[in-house]
Image (cartoon, rainbow, N blue to C red; front, side, top):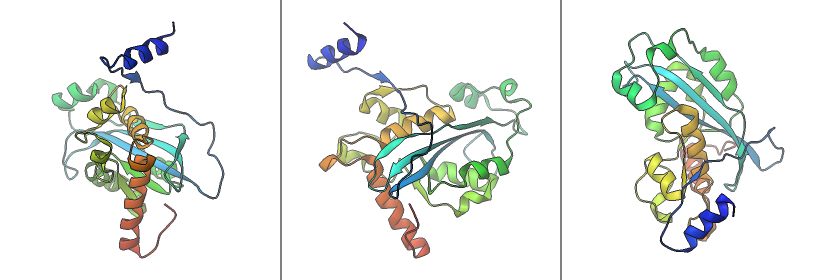
Length: 227
């Protein structure tokens, strides 16, 4: 019996819940289509919580293809870079992320490389965007011109029976696990959650997020954009 069949047998018993390792659906190229868009999921690791004084030490960005009605098609090759800060990495940050001063030594990230990678994205998403957005906009001002959304705040997770909004909690309740607290891994986990379709009427989490993003974009700029 395969491991997957064993897992299904355990689940059918009603006495067990099985967590599966996250397996992203990778795309070789961006699909074409009038109703297909390219989004960008972003996650940062930093030396602290204050964008005015703390610094980025890792940038992860995962492009993804989606449909206008909220279907997640798949993910594209990621941008993953480390950056040596001008101050020592706090012990608590190393404990959380595994990133040490030695690992970061000599690494640089050019803001123009970040801007180029994000240039064709119709929408930027982060899990807890109110944290990531000030950091990345200060580092790379091109992000201030992009429509933004937050997978933590802009999805009514409770309507699908989820408790809490932290990434790890949501993943566990959705039935998968991943290596957390590294930027690209967190992006991939968040995108898997946006593809979750256990909401009323079979809607995806991404469809709710897009509705919210379009509403904010219209109010802010007076146009619908291409989100």
